[in-house]
Image 1 (cartoon, rainbow, N blue to C red):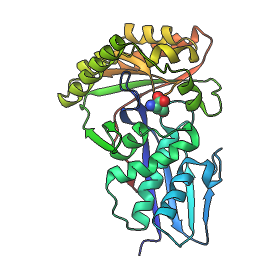
Image 2: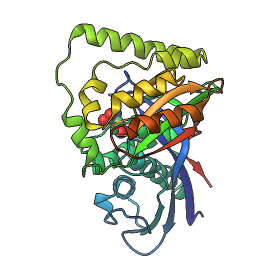
Image 3: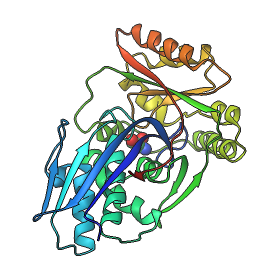
Length: 305
Ligand code: HSE
């Protein structure tokens, strides 16, 4: 009988420009680790990171709470959380913990759930931080690689990214609001022009084709979003300058990572990603904002370690 399981889940970027709430890509820049153990009574959370320890306020805790109820688990559960993904910066931090929790629970209680069901449970964890459920980050953290999420019923399509796809992420050192995703969703338009929808749909389709054809140029040059990015970029100091600098340094496409404030550039091994990172740092420095810029690659999904 399994008594303890440890799972590592990667961070992710959501939207990839025009694929708002639909596209996700797992990244190898950072990961979270969750260890679940059958122990005592109820659910207890331990962590040396600065995160809520009440199950109902923690994305991983919420997942365990819901799964315990759904599968009528009698045993107590102790959970250890080790955060590696910076929280609140648009890199799927809450989703990485939620994904790791769902995968660990499935293994600990030998439930044999399919990946779509794991995404469904992990999505419940997003409610703790985002206020609403969206599956793009959790799907990427569970499946790995590039994912397309359809809802009602939930169905995730996963595609292996091209081997030469490289990402540069610039994470600004700014104070993010409490419930940041909720805040950055509140600035989005409720109605959009049909011609804007057509433009975003064309680019989103081209991104999917780019992943299918393993064509990094096509992916990068289709990272163009004229609906969500213009509404959110004002929340990020110096966004236009960072984007322009990254493009001038050889990036194929640049946009907000998830709900921000990190900015992500898409490029290939054939360019100089470190130069793009430097250019992004310079861009932020124009608005007196420090940032950490990292080069990363697509990642595999959550794994038992
Ligand atoms: N698709 C979500 C959003 C991702 O952009 O609000 C949040 O990380």
